[in-house]
Length: 346
Image (cartoon, rainbow, N blue to C red; front, side, top):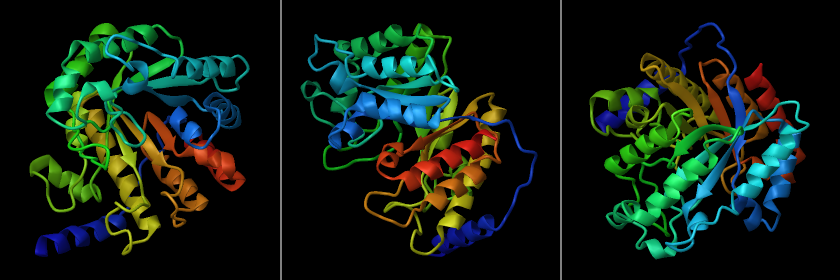
């Protein structure tokens, strides 16, 4: 209990600090898009993506290459879930004010619930069975073919290898599905071997605040710790932080304000930006919260704009917003998103 008090006290002190420095160059800004979100809502993914691209004019869009969709059987490859989305981006660029490039996410772990997008034929959805499936020839065919198929595309900006591969995000559909260190090393090495022209980003989330992250550098799993930024940075060419300031899993959500939690995240970005720079690597905000969590209404459009103001202060190479599909149903959120993009690009 004493340790917990110390961590909380340090967190509150950190929240009151300011670290002034010259404003860095603007990052590339965009959003994540999964066709599954549109399908769940009964809409056409290509139409949703085209509308979002035309309305926001992003620098980047992150798209998933889902293993379960691309390899429905061990001896079949089908890229119909991703090729039409790539075509939408190419069509958009014909007349775009801001041509858009693509971050492609490849691996068994991919973004959007249930996180592990493994085909049924691959076996149980937890370790050690996942490791065995990923070591098999069918999985490696999916992985290598995805890289070779898109590495020459003029749309490609970078690869994301797995999604939060080192973190435990179990749910009712999966068990312990953390990707093993040896498998992750093989995948990053394979991207570098097959496509040396493009970087590989590894994503994770961070601890409650930067103080907890600092402890993680020298001590294992202190109270309040979560995420693996140091490990993810070691594996990839870029560290992608998934930053959420409101939701059921957010530490001390009912005890501190969203404004303070946003400041904690900004301090986290500053800290890991310094760590990445020292290693000659990039720092991304791979998921910037841009929608309320589920049916909660505590995260407001003004909080999205405030987050953009905070993150603009730091040396980021990429910022990708999460949840922009929900903007399609709400012009207030669309306006806030447009403002956030403008701030981040300023």
